[in-house]
Amino acid sequence: MNGLLVINKHAGVTSHDIVNDIRRTFNTKQVGHLGTLDPLATGVLVVCIGEATKLVQYLESVSKEYVCEALIGMESDSYDRAGTIIDTKKVTCDKLNEELVDKCLLSFLGKSKQLPPIYSAIKVGGKKLYEYARKGKEVEVPSRDIEIYEIERVSDLSFHDDVCTFKFRVVVSKGTYIRSICHDLGEKLGFPCLMNALERTR
Image 1: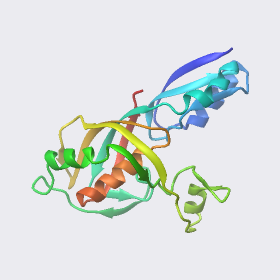
Image 2 (image 1 turned 90 degrees about the horizontal axis):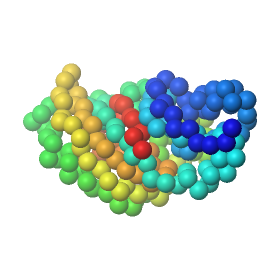
Image 3 (image 1 turned 45 degrees about the vertical axis):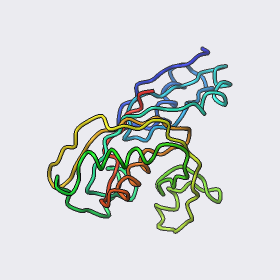
């Protein structure tokens, strides 16, 4: 078989798991995907099969759209809820409002340098960053050139159990980490922040 499959990935599996399933289903090793989704993430995973794998180099650089749920009040070592919590700070509605959140979100628009999470598959010195992190070894994380084309809050702020959650939609360039956007948003707001949920919608 040659062609493209658009998979609606569910949480709890890796992009590599899905590629392996498709290899077994279609009995071919010629399978590749366009843009890794973390196990926590859901949504659009485009998979190329057979001769269509030749299209990967042309398609992988296209922009991607996500809807993310951010959680303000906690920070983890992986920048998402799957990691170990390393900081907390009580959030109340008198300290945080939608106007402030919207202003901070809009400040991400355009081109910038982004620092990826230490728990990521980016290679430094021939090893993936998460390999250093798991062994407790310090390594200099290289920043990356990214661009954020659109970003907007799409839900009200919800305050509960000393934290605040809300959803935002974002359209980004290749290589952009939404987890890092959440972490950096927290720094702008003066609160720890992590990615609570993520769906790739396009």
